[in-house]
Amino acid sequence: MDQIPQRAAAPAAEAPPKALPPPALCGFLLLLALMFAVSYAVGSSVGPVAPGMHGTRTTQDGTGGHDGGGMDMGGMDTDHGSGG
Image 1 (cartoon, rainbow, N blue to C red):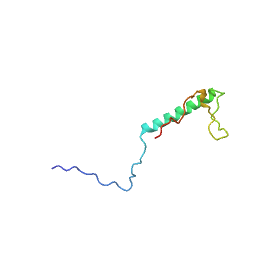
Image 2: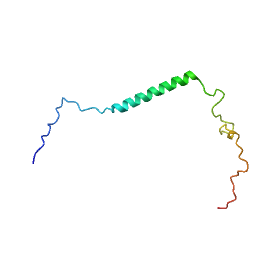
Image 3: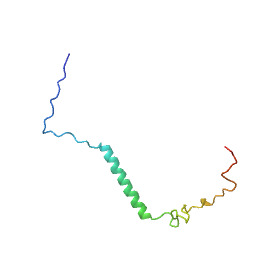
Image 4: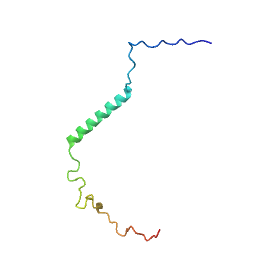
């Protein structure tokens, strides 16, 4: 039976390899950051898309400021008369 020669233990002067992320991951994160920066710059230069549109407001009773968007929900009640 042939024996495979084994490598001797590493000397103390040799540092263990550091755990580095793969280069593809670094490139992807760099590309992601670059795309974010470019899209932010373009968005800042263009300005608001709908200047008259405002975020949701809280009314006096603490609920959101949406009124349902003008949808008529007439005839829809929550109690259908089921007893069970």
